[in-house]
Length: 221
Picture: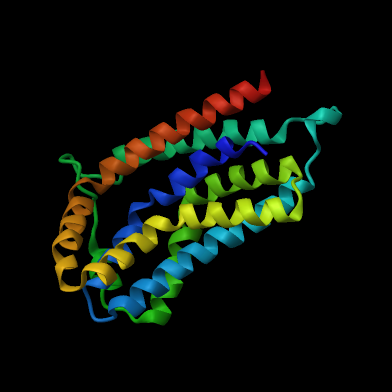
């Protein structure tokens, strides 16, 4: 299995500012750890479910070694174009001239919900995140196309899900470890996301788009 081919998906899903921001904001509001953990759980379970679905899809696609079309390369090429398109859209439509996100009204709403709704929010952030969906598809095709053993698939999938979801769990771990002292770094994280989150997302989308585009072209050529 080409493990390195999973790196763009892991990095791209892990660097999802909206879910990280939601967890950070929830830690500072009424729900506290319970709501933050529920939101992170919804996100991580969605990452795992998407990988399972796309792996099953990848196993049923024709293999290029047998004269079939290299579907994985085509998907990577299309994913690269879509990610670059999302970067342009984020730059033109979803940010203010000074770089801040156009709207942060969601923060007040997310910060006031309980664990059940926070879990739903975590799932919803994944299902409405084109970047996460596209990268999940490319990751699933990498694993499914390799046709690994069950043990290798479970091991690789577990590591993939843990790493991809690690950034959603990191604020909770920091808050638990530092206690009241965690408020300062969490507040700094909130301020950074509010100020630079939009530009950071543009940078991530651009880099991932180029990587997927090059990988797709290499596979086709």
